[in-house]
Length: 466
Image (cartoon, rainbow, N blue to C red):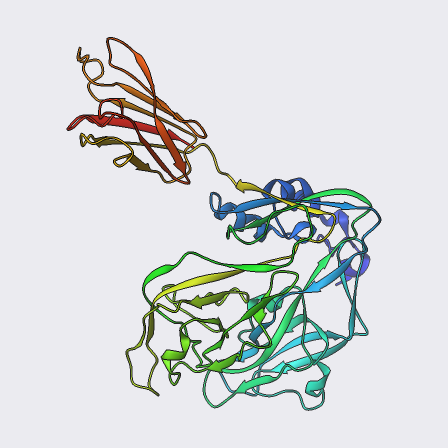
């Protein structure tokens, strides 16, 4: 104690006693933890607010992360500010597996927020609130959260929703509290909240940032003002269970949806949206409808992505939807097909968004072979389908180098051209092939089987570059 009072205790307390260090380590800061250069290289859409966790998540998805370049031409400064993310339902504010009255989570509450030029959020006129897992502190009153901003402070509860531990959230004025302390786990949840997405000052001039997503349809491309919208993903076929949240809250079903400026999806006013518990819903009403999982826990083979509050699904009219359990019992509802729904944000004036490709994508190579069938002509084209869009394809006969001058030996195809074949071996004549590139598929034909490289029973080998 005397050494501490004298300031000679051999431990540094936050810079109070620097002489207490034998060797001072490098202090962490933004430049040496996650620099702006790395943020730009990885194409992190979270920008200056990116964390090492964001960077690791991109690296874990190399080859599956799509990248867009966003160019903003600002004639004058665009002030810093914020937008609110999509409504997220039923977030756990406090939860405990023990007696319902002894655990809580503490939050800082503010009536307004300010965003500085660097994109940092300041809570204004703050107060503190403790949320108990089974009831609300009667001395505070629920109204202290409604229509306010909240930021996590500390917790004595066993659990809160992990995303609430970081960032600032807004609680809509019409949100309600959901409590259950009849049996473990005991909890208090909020029916709706929205994440605050802050953005920094944009000085006048041209600014380039990069947007990333594992969904190819996450952003639209263009250099003019375009409204927000959505696309239906490819049909996912196969018997799949429809998710229901673990605590029985079910799904919200509606006939029409709308998309906000930031790409967040919500039900349109005329959607007739209704929340259903799947253990009682009439499965016939699900066809041709959009549905949005309310939240909770789901298995990986179920429809639903509970970690993404903007995950929506459409069930086609021709889907076969069946219930394999009695009404009112544990729910087992299946569909034979569904389509993910992706909302994309609007493109404002003075903004250009260009698709660049897949992060980490390199030259793709595919090899293979086929056996000729002897057919030819426009009604019998040869067709090859690859894992990627081919830019160049080379085919050669398997008997090359075996002193066999019969048949045609080579064919070459370059994306956007007709292609040609060479042969026979002793003449080396060129023949134009009628080739067609269609996405990942290449097809071609000519006037006889040999020229088409489709001699009956002949072996042909190919290599494709993309």
